[in-house]
Length: 286
Ligand SMILES: NC(=O)C1=CN([C@@H]2O[C@H](COP(=O)(O)OP(=O)(O)OC[C@H]3O[C@@H](n4cnc5c(N)ncnc54)[C@H](OP(=O)(O)O)[C@@H]3O)[C@@H](O)[C@H]2O)C=CC1
Ligand SMILES: O=C(O)[C@@H]1CCC=N1
Image 1 (cartoon, rainbow, N blue to C red):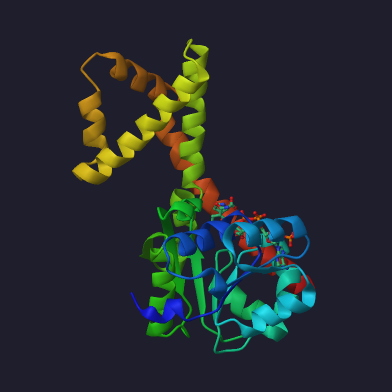
Image 2 (cartoon, protein in one colour; image 1 turned 120 degrees about the vertical axis):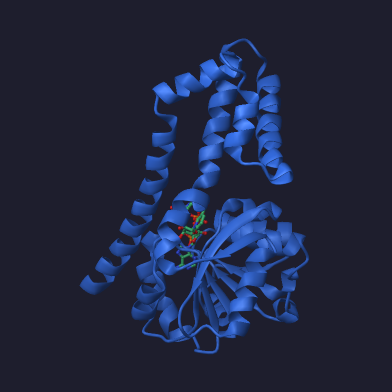
């Protein structure tokens, strides 16, 4: 890892769950100190106070201080929702310098569109992280605009590797990656909710049902990681011929579980693209 990351000022524009997941990870893994981190939103002052108290990062929702934070940053991380991009970019456009590195976590927004909206050739890193970055177990997809130098590529990789794994991919694969790993934690939580609920309905206490579900998911993920075996092979080992699991997998198959997941992944990617396209449409009308 380059030691550049410990020397740069990083500004987070937007202070929601994704921004917090990233900077919390950076702080807890001691890759960046809170003094290097500048966090901002427009309205929610309570949120700013909470983040300052909890992490010791610089925070503001004052417009002038926001401008100063952005102008002085080496790295600016765009962490607002797609719907806020258009207005936000109008404010940001005059503040950027071509020496700064821009990192976007915004679903569906291509590097090309960022360049067009900001009328800039500044280096842009498009990422799709996930919220597990909070605990250093994130999975981030990443691609670069043509102006990102190898040193800046490494800086961005280091930043996200500090909070998990990084896959550098072609930009046209960012949507499908969003479907797999950006939205992915939500599918696992949904499965956990359903397993817990079923356990409670069957008579387990809530505490027991939650604990068993959690340990089962943790254990299964770690089995894949630590044994290196294929999930299909591990599933086969649970599934005794004509046994209980065999019967339950048949039920999942009746409900087309695989197809449901496949469609969910694809739909997340499509929705990302729709959100990105909508941003471009808004800005052309403006
Ligand atoms: N959540 C996730 O799992 C993932 C999210 N992403 C991406 O991350 C981005 C943020 O998502 P998430 O963190 O969930 O969203 P949140 O709604 O939690 O946070 C968005 C933040 O942006 C702030 N904001 C909006 N406009 C501006 C502005 N012009 N200047 C400064 N701050 C602004 C909002 O505060 P205020 O209204 O007070 O300004 C709020 O703090 C999205 O683009 C999403 O696609 C990517 C990967 C995973
Ligand atoms: O739901 C969303 O739009 C963002 C992108 C991936 C995860 N959350």
